[in-house]
Length: 542
Image (cartoon, rainbow, N blue to C red; front, side, top):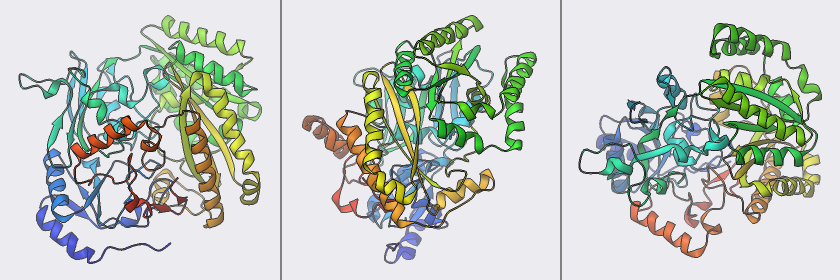
């Protein structure tokens, strides 16, 4: 694919170095920074700038205004919606991972303040022994994924079963706007003895900067709520023969606020997940399970349970629902799990080995090793969240889209699977993973090398184009069903699916906080001038 290279880029970068003396500016590995997991921009970024604090970000914004640059803020890069890759030839990547200080842990007032580049794993480690934890405490990729990026993108997983997404755990923010000002939200914005202990005093300004795909500013600090950490945990897995019973069970589990994590995999995805693991992985898993238990004796019992369960159970498993419950006491956690057992048995499920949730909770932030399939195929993740009452319909409509594309699917040997989640009391998440043979992007190589050996495939533009078409059709159907999305970026239709008055308000807020349009052009609010630049080796953005 032809790559557009800015005219006199070297001279521009040298002028930038003079203006931003003391801030790291790199032109190495620019190929990496024009890709995410699915998309690849046709523009290379000019450079990658790495601020260390809010003052650095302010200087970068003012330099961008002076030189007419766009700024694309980035954490670990582990997203798949084109949100941070360049939309034009004058883009600087703002790598926020260097802003990684934990500013304050306040157990008495129940909050923790971190810089945007702190990883979820680092935050988790820092809170060990304090007896408190954020209601939402990270993503699968939390070894690398940062707090700031998760708040910009919108994220789900640990705690999302009934506590919601990353946005629900935030009390306040510090954000650098498009004119280089620092805006503080929440109670910390007061002029008398300010402290970030409360989110809502007047209008909820914090919410305006959450899940914005970085379009409204660069987050430099975030304050998260803290709640008591669980004293007891129960895990269980259940096999379903029919999707309808599974989806309705998941909706009920969320509605009754029973599980902190509740997720399901289709049979093929279960086998694929287990096939990635080596003997060394198994031994590490047993060690993690034994260490994570509340007592040495329980650790031994849990490790033995995983060892006995092994991987053989996946051969006959159906749709596999995995549930984790918490409590202040063991009876409380067990009571929640017993209620889940009642719900799923009524739907015809059978309890099976619980190796997956037990290992996951013991080692919540593993190395990122699943960006490609075990056979080297590329993966496109796409998701929606729908009301509990529409979960079955949404799943069936997704399958109908695949059936309509059966010819392309057969021709290019495209496969797909599902990762289903309970998303708070009202919603069920449907995530489908499309697999196809194609060459990896630089970001795949970057992370897969650190995870160990991996297989790759040669490029296949035809398969890539077919996947892009299927992706568009699935997203279009989800929109018609009233589904919503996290990680909006440039992949999911946001402004064009909002009521006119709502869209106008969002546009006006963008104009207020980013009047020159320098932040992540094309995110949330499509911009025709940039639309042609973000066409990926995976196909044009939907």
